[in-house]
Image (cartoon, rainbow, N blue to C red; front, top):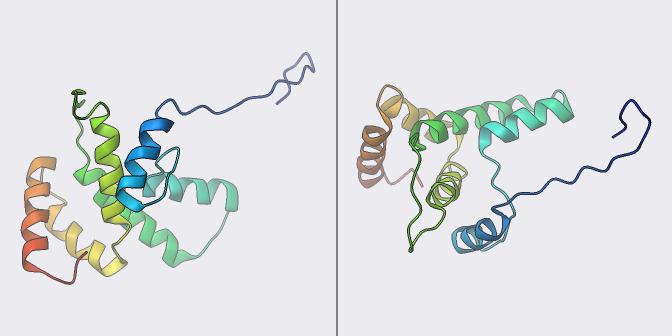
Length: 136
C-alpha cells in the first residue's frame, strides 16, 4: 500500500483470537483455522474479489447466512473460566451447523425461525432437529 508521500507501507492482518480459534475449530472440525468466515462474509468476499460466480453457490451462502445471523446471540457473552471466548465458540458451532445445510434444508429451517427472537429460534431448531432426520 502506498501513501501520498510514496512511502511503501506493509499492512499485516492480525486476528487476536487466532489461538482460541485454532483450538475451537480443531475440536469442532478436526482442522485448525485462524479465523471464522461466516457465510455472509464469504458471500461478500466472493462478490468483491471474484465478481460474478455460480448463482447456486450465492443462493446457498445467502440462505446459510440468514440462518446463521438468526441463531447467533446478539448480546455480548461474558467470558468464564471454562469458556474464555464464548462468542467465538458459538460462531464455530453455528458455522459447523450451517455448513451442513443444503439449500432445501435452509428453506425448511428458515421458514420456521425467521420471525422468532434468537432464543425462540434456537428452541424451534432443537425441536425441528429432534423430529426431522433429514437435517444435519
